[in-house]
Image 1: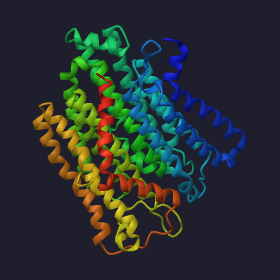
Image 2: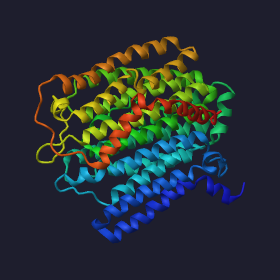
Image 3: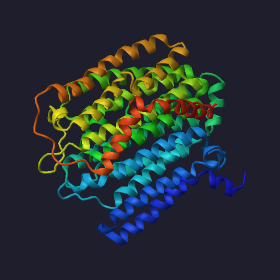
Image 4: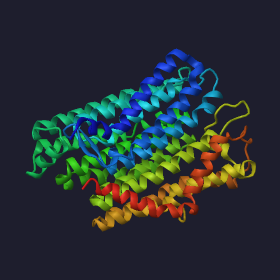
Length: 481
């Protein structure tokens, strides 16, 4: 394969990296005054990267001797990541503009682009080394984003916790990679799969455990979830919305590729790990969220809970299982972004963000439109029909049943009832409690438009999209096999 064709296959990452470097120079020379220009230019870069997915980047095959894979699976995951990144940039100006002493700076969209470039490398990795480089590029930018509000002690604490625990997880992942390399003699996914196919090896088994432990941290699956509530609460809300959407898609897509392509012959071994992580995440995420009084912490536990449901599809394995994972994550991204768009509207009379669930009391009478949209997202996250969240959960349960995991699917379905409690609690607070002080301010036109789109997609109005989504996810899953 020619070098130019290989460069075309990595064009989305080249666009993101080149755009980030160029905008970093603009930010350096333009200073604070260039923030608006850099933000809109960053969105244009993301659109350009999305357009680049249409060529060899979505069906080119292997590039650079197997280090990078351009296929429909990666293209689908990248499309979700680019959308979430663009929304995270769009919703930032109003939040930072109303936060005393911490105005939006042009470095914010540049960091988003660099993190997105790393995520693109993650989902296209065909080798453990490219996997790790992409993961670290994403993580290093994320550490800075978490602590972006320098004068806010919570933000600084969130960045520090994320960095320390992220470094620990990277060490665990590297140790697993070294074990896999030592006992297989290669870091390429195809070679690793051949090594696992030759029979059970204690070294390879330990390597598998450590690799999945490191990946579990990145997707915040139990028992490697400990950073999630504190980081989500302390980070700026647009950053939290980004963390809850794009990196989740990247981590789960990466884990899926590693499980199927590199460790497919050892499915009986890693399936046990995934089943434990799935059930533990579903149950813990649901139970821990019940007593929360901060809306961002509640949504953090909700994200842990939802990772568990996505892992049900991964545990099923096969094309149907992978397809259900992508199907679930596509709907999850829309629900999550919509929920955080509501959180952004929670402001007091002084314009400062409010995060207490109690402040939502009686919102159906003071801000009926916001209450309706939030109710749609909460019902959908709970998996209540006819909203799209129901179909997402149904898809992963059907995949598990088809794979013969009847008990696993039954326990997961029963545990989802626990999660419904705290989602319904929010709806009860908005519709049945006595009104609290009305949330101040009007909804920004951009945020309002995004809210309407997210709510419409998740509602029965989004049903016509389900057929197209099923076709797209099936095609993307087939690329791994």
